[in-house]
Amino acid sequence: MNDAVPPKNHPGLAERAGEACAQVQHITDLLFKWGFSRLRVLGKEQHQCPPRESKILCRLKKIGRTSVKLLGDFGTSYLEKYEDLKARSRS
Image (tube, rainbow, N blue to C red):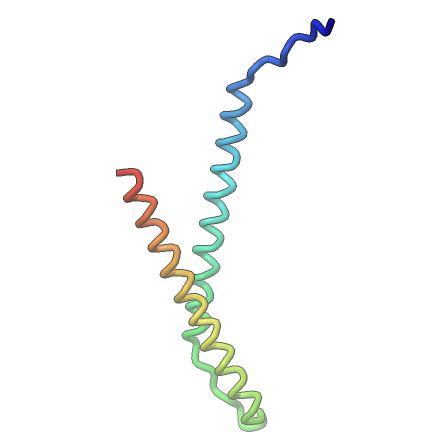
């Protein structure tokens, strides 16, 4: 017969693991928020084409900045709505 004792339940360990996951999620949210706001700022900066720079390169840089701004706007909008939905679910 197997008289093995079942392992003890460790609610303290489970709580600590849950809190650690929540902290990681919070830090991740903050990093994304910072990153998206930084992309918006970078996308808004105007680039003056120096006379020696080719027009194609200048246009590519403009497209890149527009894309970066679009991504920053998208991310910021997403995070604002996400925060709003989290606040509603708590109510």
